[in-house]
Image (cartoon, rainbow, N blue to C red; front, side, top):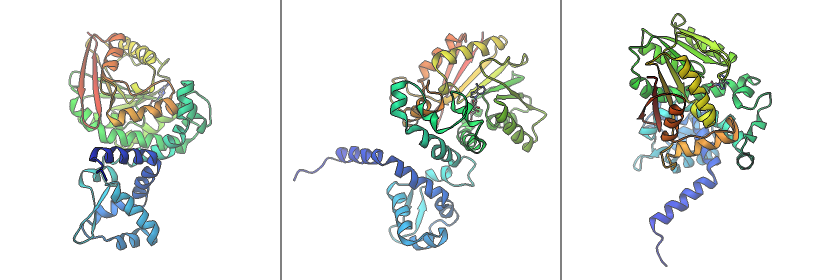
Length: 351
Ligand SMILES: C[S@@+](CC[C@H](N)C(=O)[O-])C[C@H]1O[C@@H](n2cnc3c(N)ncnc32)[C@H](O)[C@@H]1O
């Protein structure tokens, strides 16, 4: 019989993984929820299959399903000689609860918000609308407005954003040159995670977190916890109608560009441009796609959620498209800086 080429096998495996992607996610989620990754981090090279079953309180078959699954998905490894299980070193920091850059919040957001919502992807494509929003009762045409009616889900969402920002804003903050600025507006700033990190790195800077009312309350709690209430305040309102503070000279637009249509982004960029002094800057920070639209995976797959759930009018744009929105919004100079974790920083400068 003719031998299958390795490429054929890879693409078939890839297809299998897609066919049962939801179950693969559940294995990962269970590994986090049942603290398998935490346990392996605490006791590396020491735990056998049986000791893990005892530690996490699972019977033999359930534990075999879970651990064989995690092994096959290459989320954990087994020492061939001793049989001891271990985390995969380069993934561990994203999966253990004590890591400051873990993705556990991101996984919670996928589980409770993205999964139920993207079920309606096909209809959302056909109707060019976020049909998945039907899973989240309440008023308003965007997920953000609907979450106001469900505080528990709103928290899951904000924890997801915090987790995303905690892992990516290290790279953002390293790039931001804020010495010449006095007042930064964090536009759609969420629970204040980015503002707090920026404030700690830039002790001269005043920051305002601008978001919806209930989110500003969450931001205030975090700002107070970090003893930063003298330097960070909040502004609640609507991005499209609220007047921006006169004193701002730079704006962070983090994980916002992918929620709005090109026209709305340009409208918001014009609004921000007109509120900034000459020399003012905007920092658009987000996962973005390659300019040919192909990859990276995070970006192309992420667009499904924006179409089916979040707003139904947007996607993860390419770097070139975002640069174009900024220019159409008035910013005369645009710099693009590619960062790790598939993130990009686009800086718009008002001349
Ligand atoms: C995707 S989250 C980004 C949060 C944060 N900037 C970050 O990077 O983690 C989008 C934020 O925009 C806020 N938002 C959405 N629509 C808004 C509106 N019309 N006015 C004010 N804030 C809005 C949401 O409440 C949410 O906190």
